[in-house]
Image 1: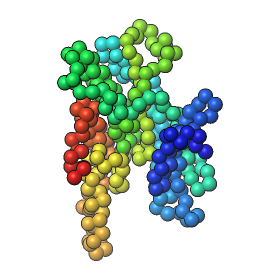
Image 2: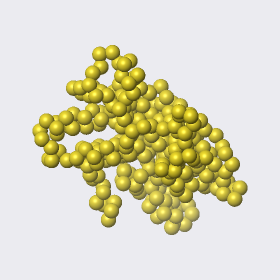
Image 3: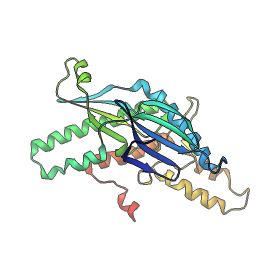
Image 4: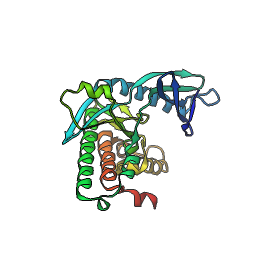
Amino acid sequence: ECDDYSFRTTGDAVTKCKMTRGKDKFVCVRWMCRSKFEVNDVARKAFQDVYAEVTALEILRDCDKKISVIEDDISVSYSFGTLRDYGACEDFLCVATDWVDGVGLNAWRSNLGEYLKKDANEANNDRTLLLAIAKTMLQMVVDMHEKNVVHFDLKLEHFILSTRRQEEEEEEEGSKGTKYAITLIDFGECAVYDISDKVKGTSRARGTEIYHAPEMLLIDEIKTHSASFPSGDCSRTTAAACFVDGKKCDCYALGVALCELFFSNSPNRHAYEQ
């Protein structure tokens, strides 16, 4: 059971909370996999998502603790959420990952302030750090895609920024200056593909709408439109239109996140709020 209710989110089918066991802290995510003891669409999605997240984190385990970039006196390492356990409990499927002490880049960026309100030296230091973080984010997505993992929910709040632990700093001979670490979390919408798949795509709308690529936004609309046609009239064209390239969608979402990082504003926010 959850023992820290300061961090707890509950959706229609997914619950997240923080757990502590001794000195270890975890994030536990529970997917509802049964409704009145009957398998339904929610259950099917839960099984797909849990399998994908567990598989992705196992694949990405070897990417942990890389040093991505060193800019002046700033070094940034990166890793992906660390899987600790998974399984079934009553009507739920559960996945436990390490708790990451840090702050989402969305909250960190909002506290950074605007360049125009700072003197030249301070603003330049901010730009250097922003560039180092941006390069790290790009490298993380490259690593994922090279291993045929597509996240489908890239956004600033899923990149957790923290300062590195002292013991890690001592291992880096000759490394000086400020040391940061970025961890990419929340693979609940991800997909893992076989190397033989020509297109790493999806026919299901995934992720957060404000970060969606245009083709991802069209998935539900196309399906709704095609449902109005008599059976058989929904051609292969419609089916193809409902299948989007996941890696391209990740790149689009990353572009939106980088705009937010540098300009503290999303290019899609005005249209989304309307």
